[in-house]
Image 1 (cartoon, rainbow, N blue to C red):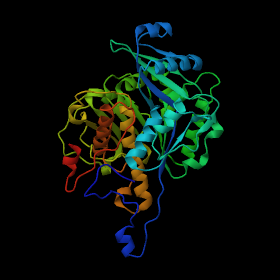
Image 2 (image 1 turned 90 degrees about the vertical axis):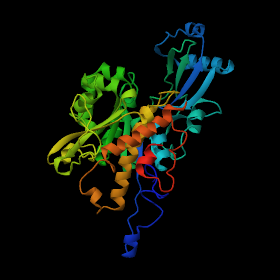
Image 3 (image 1 turned 45 degrees about the vertical axis):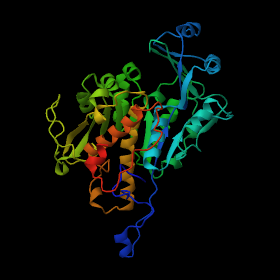
Image 4 (image 1 turned 135 degrees about the vertical axis):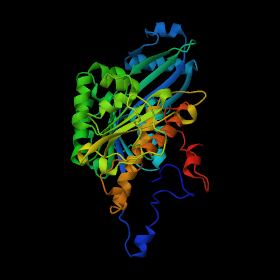
Amino acid sequence: MRFPGRRKHKHYFPVHERDPLLHHAGVDAPEAKVHVVGIDQTLVDIDARVTEELLARYELPKGGSTMIPSERAAQLYDELFTQKQISYEFAGGTVGNTMHNYSLLADDASILLGVMSEVIRVGTSGYRYLSNTSSRVNLDHLQPVDGPIGRCFALVTPDGERTFAISAGKMNDLRPESIPPAVFENAAALVISAYLMRGNAGDPMPATTQRAVSLAKAHGVPVILTLGTSFIIAERPEFWRSFIAEHVDVVAMNEEEGEALTGYPDPLLACERTLDWADLVLCTAGPTGLYLAGYTDDAVKRATNYPLLPGAIPEFNRYEFSRPIPRRRCEKPIKVFAHIAPYHGGPARITSANGAGDAALAALLHDISANRYHRARVPSSAKHARDFLTYSSMSQVCRYANRVSYQVLVQSSPRLTRGLPEREEGLNDEAYWAM
């Protein structure tokens, strides 16, 4: 498993080498297999440049988001393809993006649960999805369906306005019995999104998600919820607060979703409020950067070496060098916060913001799984004297998430197309993260 950056071309955890100290003592470190599991609505993002006449013809309100049937989606796609109006097609879905990015960053396995068209032809949505997904993402457990997966058309008119047309296809047809309990053995996390709990009447996806959450809890696997989009949370915020309090360990959101959940437009206050229901919160806040909020025990808190930051909570980053611990595992829990401004001030030109939050979550997920991996390999390490959620400090996790998010902002694809730059010989941490 690779880990953030390199030190003299050595991995943090060289999985192919035996621990030299244990080997010298005649003892080999135990084998460790770690993966992450995600459930998603399998869909393809299609970006096209169109005229307003096309929007009117397909009865799509400009600037809106409209659900369309599979037949009309096929007709729309054929026209866009024939007229060569499609700019790009990429595999999408917030959890699918996260699984792909995680496997690319960690060079390690993840398991994606969802549906896939039983018959796949070159050029179809199913083909695009498979060809744009890392080979390290295990797709063996996808449930076959008779029909297309989802399609999300982003139709851009000459004035730059984006109009969305969404065809669900069979993406919500994942059945509860298609969730195999065995995938949660040795899992470091289960990742779900709010989209999964918003099915139409008769859709099995909400019940399927609940089954996966129950299996994860039975195996001691932390549940990570990404809120998806603000309007879903705003529809029933009380439901989501109760759901998080009962089932979720880690929440990933942006500032708009945080406001819909908590009522606070300030991302820092939204993070603090969300800690009433979850153990760890990641909040991306656009040009403001990103925040991480969690708990640690007062006995193991670590003060920062960086300047103390002003905000709705004065000097909120005082203990950002701490590692987060689940609140129930703390003898004297205290809230700790970390923040980082956009990497290099943010890119001069943002190609697309689609997937930046998923990239940040993938970085956090990598750190969580690395902690699980290291604990299995070296259980007696002082790194695991407490039940920490991450391997790194909250400050370092922010740096990593920020850097990975930047990588997505400067490309067209919502998924990473390559890993981060490798650390050169002799390059220290500060110089590497400033690249």
